[in-house]
Image (cartoon, rainbow, N blue to C red; front, side, top):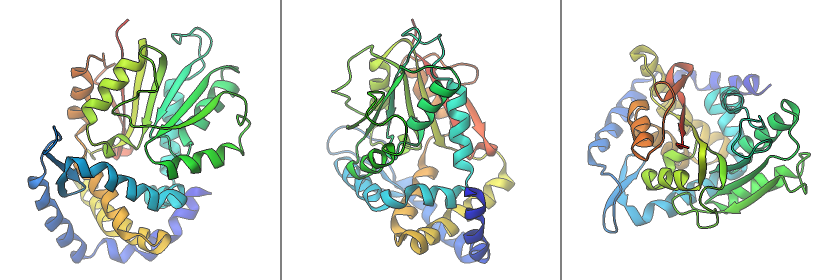
Length: 306
């Protein structure tokens, strides 16, 4: 149903995404890539999409974006990905298999879902643990820096069987400084389509390492980089031509979705991000990542050494 819903708007914009005007706009935007610097201490700059901004400003500007899109976030994800994001999330959760007896807590898992916003991943985690593994005790703490996104998840949670069971909780928090989470207390740390918006990704990964138990898993699902030049050309036309227009038509917010596609372009490559995870001390299985749909998205995992 989601995929069918997504296909109708895409036909209306088919002519737009192939226009030369779109290609010229993308070429102009990519010049800004050279101006961006990495994050650092106070006074340094970072990127907000293709724009270079003071590091201290990024958190507020990202917050404004997600406050703007909170109520239409899942609908826009359906339109942006033609519904495929739901399949990616399902696969992500299955690959983690929450609720198995192999967790560091024995029969139940203590899961932290960062940038969990609307609850998509948390609800899937509990569904899988309960319905697949018969686990009635694993619990998920959903944390997001944006109160508006978190409010959407709390509202939706009332329609799930996990409301008021003690298995699901929500808390506003910054992934770069998880003061409310004890060290060595988490079995599984997940972040889906959120880490590219963090100001200091290395700091967030270090916090993930701190709060995870030995043997715990750090798992990221994020938009990434397409591994086919032909497919990549079409993908960029879609991103930079269609998605901001969809944001304007459906959500009345072109600028926020322009930022979102630029943030995808700025995210490290699969190999670069895997190296960031390893530098923190995680052991990565295999080559460190799994590409989905030709690299449009990737799953990254790291295991904290026992």
